[in-house]
Amino acid sequence: MTRRLLLLLPLAGFLVLSLFLYQGLSLNPFHRDSALMARDFPAFDLATLEDPERRVDRSLLATGELTLVNVWGEWCPECKREMPQLLDLSDRGIRMVGISWKDTREKGLGFLEEFGNPFEVNIFDPDNELGFELGVFGAPETFLVDREGIIRYHHTGYISPGDVREHILPEVEKWQ
Amino acid sequence: MAVIRWMLTGLALLLVAGNLQAGAIEVREFDDPVMEQRYRSLTASLRCPTCENQAINDSDAPVSGDMRDRVYLLLNEGVSDMEIRDHMVERFGDYVLYNPRLEGRTYLLWGLPAGLVVLGALLVVLVVRARRNASARRLTDEERARLEALINRGRTE
Image 1 (cartoon, rainbow over the protein chains, first blue to last red):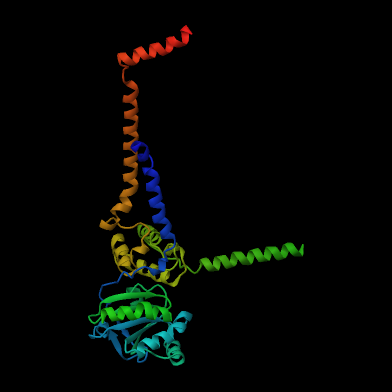
Image 2: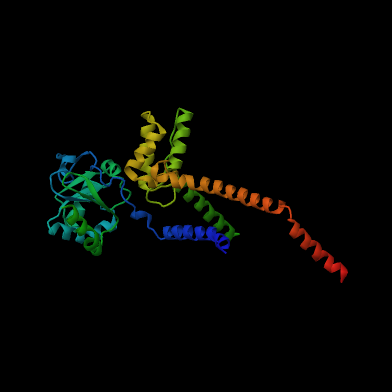
């Protein structure tokens, strides 16, 4: 009898594997972790959107203050939709830095004029220099950088009001 | 006649549009055929981060274009294929590799198919052996007598 049960072993193995693979079908490949998680914010040397004369580098993100870094572009509709949430986060006293990504200065400034500016400063990255180092593959993307300048959380895509409550605020709390 | 002409015009337009789209991926000139081969195989083995299942040599997503530029730049700087792949993984994650690297986390992934083949072969050998042994066993005297009795019973009746 036990020998007979042994014959069911391959079937059981097959079922376990199927279950594992089936579950993989429902995973969203865009919700993968950033390769930069728990690593230093990459080095860069770029002008700001607001003032072409002002250069900023990594030290902007290691000020001893927790910072949310948001990658946006005027050409990106989701970025416009998430602006109210970013303004809300800024109103809660969270330091925000923007990266004006693959955009012209004129359009970037126009965007902030129209949709509001929650950012302390915006890094101007028209040629995807910093974006490439961050592994950005589409705007909007948001990184949480801790007091020492280490990336602690990464959000790809649109931030909904629900995301603010369920993901962003708890992460900010955790790394504060 | 007019209908056919319209259809042909439509077809021609489609072909032109197709060519235009293909033109979104730049053509690169190489002096060195080895370098060209390396560029081709690298861009074919890196996966576009935004398009689920397209290599960067086949995708017109902006990020794929930027990655091709970087591959080209690094090749010209004399960087090795392995280092170029690592360069991309450091920024975009393991997701961009169609062939995951062999490391602690991926031993199971790479080893499982080979392991299952070996296990299967082992099972076949064991089963065949067990069967052979079972059939090759000689009958005991008692069994032989019983067999005789069964055969003879049919004859005497």
